[in-house]
Length: 239
Image 1 (spheres, one colour):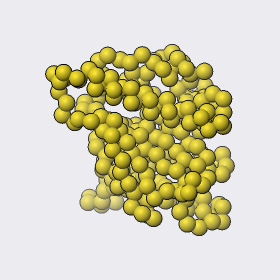
Image 2: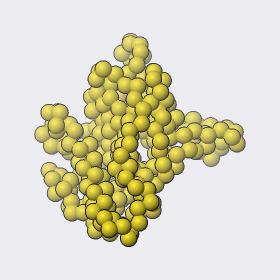
Image 3: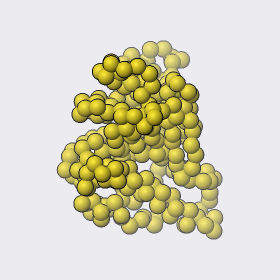
Image 4: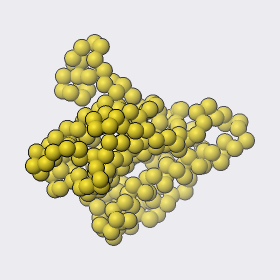
């Protein structure tokens, strides 16, 4: 069990955090019917990003679907930052994502690379997430002989830091920083415990389609930046 790991002691200082790190409670919505996300991302910020099947319908129908989606996450999400943890459920998904860049040049492979298509062609993180979801939808619709929306129109992103200009001299700085750390760890734990809460497995590391296996050491996954996650969230090394 990962109970010791998922309830770590909080770090007391912020010196190891990439400045400026924000957690701002906000929910942003996608453009209806197009899955063209319109989230107001900022660099050096951690977001809890999630979506679910339209009308709560199933979005993953086979092991291959999960693996296909994970590949798309690597191609369309990771160029913009670092994945801290994730969980893919039968009818929804969760990402805890550290944004480094909100816009990047578009390259010949459709994502990023060393040869831009044009000097003025760029793609935002919003656009890239929209492409990920739309392209996955097209593949599943062909597979399942179906039409129409697979995901809900709204892809949501939340963070938990309230004041972008909070000074270390603020009388409540320590409490607010502690609240941020609690929020980050809460998201981390919530995401990994989704399969347990849904009754799919007994332990979070029993679910194949989350990063919990990687953090437990049972799998050598490279999708998440575990070093950064431990630093940002004050996670313990005791698994």
